Length: 190
Image (tube, rainbow, N blue to C red; front, side):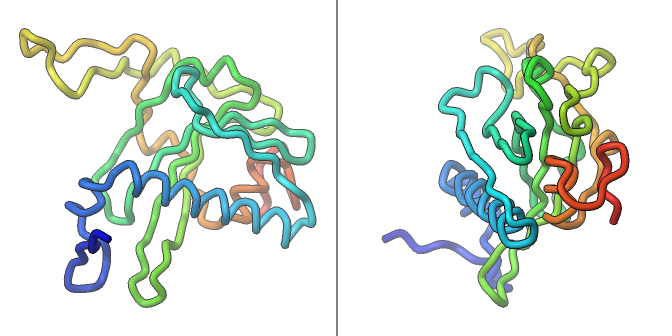
């Protein structure tokens, strides 16, 4: 069994997270889904159906259904204090009913060996499509082609952090996603 590398505080090192990126991506996704399911079930007495995408061709990672709302969700993640200031969003997500992006901000708590999550949200109210991506910049490949040129990715747009709505709690997120709890015009009252 491989040991995980930690920095002096017990937090997983950036190198370890990078070297095990597939594992780490799945870990964050499972923690998020668990938080969402628990919040909806224990706080609101409802069940969320979860469907996971096998292929990332349509811009979403997971589909949730709850309260007669279907959400196609693209998941993004970064750590608290990370330098990420934008996310790349597939334009195909706009073709899905109630498509949205949930940016998971993880705080690795070494004291209790758990991740604490907050979020950023980019999307419309339940039942409404993703806001238009027409005005956003076209993303470029991170690596150059054989000539060293970073070519455009026509189906991907760059959405800056400021376009995402900060969401501090899982309660607020599930309210925003599914119109559960106190809501005005699809926006949770907190």
